[in-house]
Image (cartoon, rainbow, N blue to C red; front, top):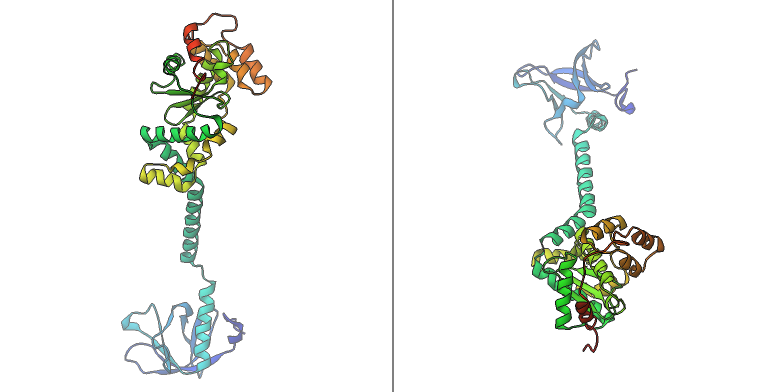
Length: 346
């Protein structure tokens, strides 16, 4: 018993008319289906006359009877034809061809699936990577004027909790002198808040907000200088505008990229959030190195940082000027002037 592509057709035979070449007479044959071939046999001797590859058989007159088949690879000069009018055999050939096609590998389908997987991977990568990339890009290209506006908006939000900033022209001149002493950016602007961030914090646009407790509650400027130095280090390590970009909505970031401005509404409560959860200070060892370079003692800063005891111990015991003299940070007169900044404010 011959094996066939579809077992239900393993004994199927039907008469047909075969033309071996153009111009020759039709010859009666018996058509049967093999594993992947169409077998044409002599009806008298059962001797096979020819085999056609089923995947390469084409029907040239769909829906017409008798069905006419040709080998797809044959040229015009050697074109064979086979005519079959048996409906069962016509259906069998169609179904066997479908079964063979289903078993064959489909590089196109695999390629399409791989392409789809690649696209999905790109989309996933875009979802994960693109937002952060755009946020970082927005922070890099934002002009100084917009940075200053964003910093002002954040400080205004802070002042809902801290009260209005303290103003005094003479004290502000002292703050400018102190900014140079601790090597803050040339255009840094220092603002004192009555109940500030528990230290000093640099906002976008080189705006530094300072807690008045570092001034009114201290005997000298060392603690304030230390906090300003740490704020400058934090801003150098991470752009304050990047902190903003990580917290505002993605659509607001796109708006900044396309319109050049960040909606003020997107910064609502941002200042109060910063007061509640300020940016972590730099590494203590990095701080100690910077204190040594600036020739500022680290112990007063450690005593007013308000964090865990081990950090305070490190900054105190390794203070580069614990027993060594250091240059004057502010004159006594300037310090007294600065301490007046929040007195009789308003």
